Length: 165
Image (cartoon, rainbow, N blue to C red):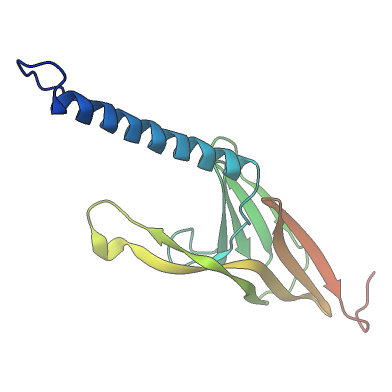
């Protein structure tokens, strides 16, 4: 927004200030546009955050997906929650009822969640991780979730003694 001041003499300082403010606004818009483009291109890693109240109670970890929704990691699998589509879940049938879930590969950033004017409901400094491991989903089999180019990928880690049938 530009507010011009009228002066009786030629080119006024008010006009120069207006041009400078316009340039600043264009620079901010360019940075926002480039940030969105990088997010869409998957240049930022998928970050898993421990659920400290920013997601549904059953989720142990949350991974926001830029512009699309988030992934909720539960003991029996994970669920994609989209902004404009129904959720999709991948469940490990017959999985352990209470597997240990842990995060590794800490990322340098922290997440902050602010809720309106009530600061006591805000979450700050939520750690972010590059990988989540669900141990003993099945006897001798772990599931590891991580991001690849901004997308979710999961692997089954099978111990040598595990019975795979």
